[in-house]
Image 1 (tube, helix red, strand yellow):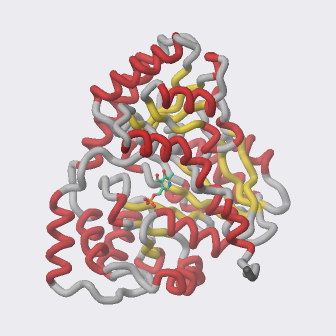
Image 2 (cartoon, rainbow, N blue to C red):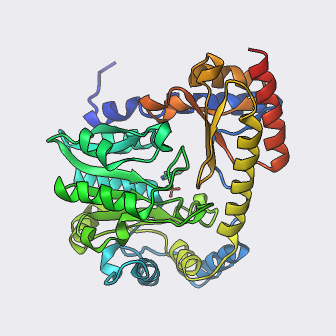
Length: 390
Ligand SMILES: Cc1ncc(COP(=O)(O)O)c(C=O)c1O
C-alpha cells in the first residue's frame, strides 16, 4: 500500500484524546453487558432543558428558519449575547460577538486565530481534558501554571508570572474551573490581569460554568475595563441551560478580534443553525429555572460526597465552589489516581483519573455530581468499602 501523507496537525492531535477517556469507555462497555456500575465519569447534566427551548426551536423550524445563516451569527442572537455581556461592561455591541456551535469550537477557532507554531499558551494544571488538543492544534505548546491544592487550586498571579516565557502569548483561564470547581474572585483576577497586561498576553476566559457557582459571586476578567483589548470570553448554553447537544456557544472579544477571526470561523463552519440561534436568543433573554435547579442539586451532592468521603481514611475531598464535579486526593490510600480509578471500576464506580487533567493531577480522581442523590450515597458506600479493602 502507498504510504499517504497527512498534515502535522493529525500527529499533534493523535495522542490527545483516547487514553483520557479509557475508563469511561470501559465503563460503558461493561454496563452494556449488564454490569452494575455507578457512572461518575463525564459531566452530562442530569435534567432536561426547559421545554420552552424545544418549543422555540420547533416553531422556528416550522417558520422556515432552516436555511444558511450568517457566519458571525444571527442578528437577534448577537444582540442577546451583546446585551448579556453589556450588562457586565459598558460598550459591548454585536460586533464584539461571534457565534459558534459550543465553547469547544469557540476555543478551537480562538486558539487557531491567536497562536501558531512556537507560541506558548499558559494554562493552569490541572486543566479541562480537551485543552491539550485545543492548544496543540495550532502548533502552539502548553506552558503549565501549577494550581496548588493548598491554595484551593486557585491560580495565583505569582505562579502565573513564574511560568511566563518569551514564547507566551495567551493565558487560557478557566473559572469556575473543571475539574476542581475553584472560582477566582475579583481581586485575584485583577492581579492575574495586571500580570497579563505587563507581559502583553491575551486572556481567553472559558466561563462555561458561570451560572453554576454554589457560593460567592462569579467574577470575570471581562468585567475589568482596563483588560478590554485583551480578554476573550468563550461560553455556551451547554451547562447553564442543560443543553450540550444543541451545540450553541459564542466568543465575545474586541472588535478587531472578531473581524480577524470571522473568515476563519466562516471557513470552518459556514454559519450556524438559525433555529438553534433563535432558541439560544430566547434562552439568554428569558429567566428560566434550569441553572438554579442544577446549582442546588450539585451543591447538595458535592456536600454529600465531601462529608461522607472525608471520614474515609486515605481520601481527601476538595469541596468545589462551582460546577459539576468534585475531586478527591487519593494518595493517602497508597495508590495513584490512575490505579485507584481502574481498581474502583471493578468495585462498581467509574471515575475519571486525575491524569486525564494534566501532569499535576496524578494524585486525584474526579467524580461527577450529575447522578441522583441515591446514587451518590451508594457510590460513597462502594468507595468506602473499596478503600477499606485495600
Ligand atoms: C471547562 C469546559 N470548557 C468547555 C467545555 C465544552 O463546552 P461546550 O459544550 O460548550 O462545547 C466543557 C465541557 O465539559 C468544559 O468543562
